[in-house]
Image (cartoon, rainbow over all chains, first blue to last red; front, side, top):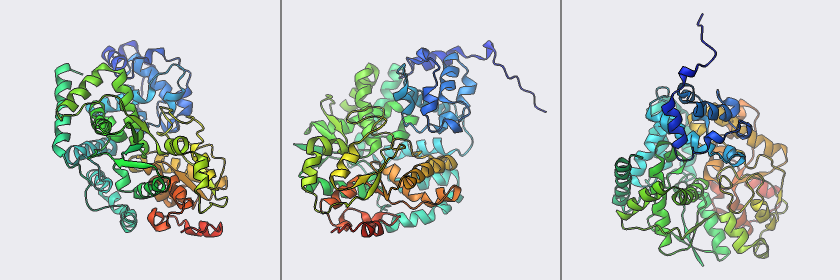
Amino acid sequence: MELKRTIKFEADRDPEFVRWISHTVGGERIRHCLQCGLCSGKCPLSLYMDYTPRRLMHLSREGFKEEVLGSSSIWLCTACYACMVHCPKSINVTHLLYALKQRAIEEKRYPRRFAIPVMARQFSDMVRGSGRITESWLIVKVFLRTSIWRLFGMSGLGLKLLRTGRMPLKRERVQRRAEIEKLLDSVAATRKELAI
Amino acid sequence: MKYAYYPGCSLRGTGRAYEESLLAAFRLLDVEVEEIDDWNCCGATTYMSVDELTSYALASRNLALAERDHSEIIAPCAACYLVLNKTQHYIRDYPDIKLVVNRALDTIGLKYRDKVKVRHPLDVLLNDVGPEAIAAKVKVPLNGLKIAPYYGCQIVRPYSTFDDQGDPTSMERLLEACGAKTVRYPLKTTCCGGSQKGTLPEVGLDLIHYLLSEAQKNGAEVITTVCPLCQFNLESFQKEAGERHRQTAVPVLYFSQLLALALGAPADTIGLQRGFVPIRPVFAKKEIAYA
């Protein structure tokens, strides 16, 4: 029998996390949250979440980093912005969810072979290399790195897309690809210089 | 006025029918567009989750390229439309982001002056062309075809620039001008799950099914979309979602396909052959005599 403490202690809080979340772009207003729950009510995914957006807002600003970054909600958010447009205190909830997702990816807090961070990485690599996304290649690359058997399961769909001309075999590319690399390198350099 | 046109990656892949039909409709309505020279991926929702700052720089290259010759951009893809709009807002609101973007553009000889307006085709068709002008040019009336207008999330949220965020009606007004009828569709701005069908399939399939069954229950003969990912999700996974719940068979078209068809564009030039759920029997039943 595994016994777990069900009450959170003051000492579980992480002040660094509080500072970070309230200074991240879009997070400035998190302390204004009224806990009204409109975000959770409007969220089409909240019924699958361990912590609903309302609870996530509160846990975040109080510094319960472990609970927040380990939450399934981060990965369930589809960025549909329903929470954000209905927030009576104009809190950028969607943007905060993005920030949490980035942080969880940075700290590698996700299951092995989890598709979302793999997809994000493959997507950004393809943009660096080609400047544009060829959807079919992206999907193949993601499934090769997550679950090959699902790729076979999708071969029927692939054939249908191919037959209807919706899966071009030629890859989409930007002509002046050097510009994309320069752009990306410049962002990395400025970020390092200004530590943002 | 000539608009800058930003197709985005999906309209060259799974969403080809969107581009084909939209450009056909624009030609028939004398809306002039010019593709942005050497445009790049906007970063979409995915890039934002790994590196937001970089995604603003990527999007701003397109804005800066368009600004050289145009004052307005048409962005048909929902994700592109949102990202370009969001980038403009964040460059205005956050000096750090502005600095990063300006420096990055400087290295490739571009400058962003915040002089270009990002617009959705629904907005342009409704407010610049107008439903009366469209109705006057209809050659193939849609004979009361019953449509569930599905907007998805990113056209109306978070920046409501031309329509209501909870109950938009621009698609209804355009398609009714072509002789269609629209059914009540309260889920019209509820999320389809985006890329979740690929990453967390059970959840994605549930969301897809609710949208389909609601449309069918309300008597829709076709669902119209404005987003390549919504269209792809609702159409391609209909059977799979049905296996988890109850089977549905609703054709899912881009609004522009019906618009172009009504304006007289031949069916094989607007991507009707690219759909997975057959639409022609529905047209036959409604006696729509398309070209």
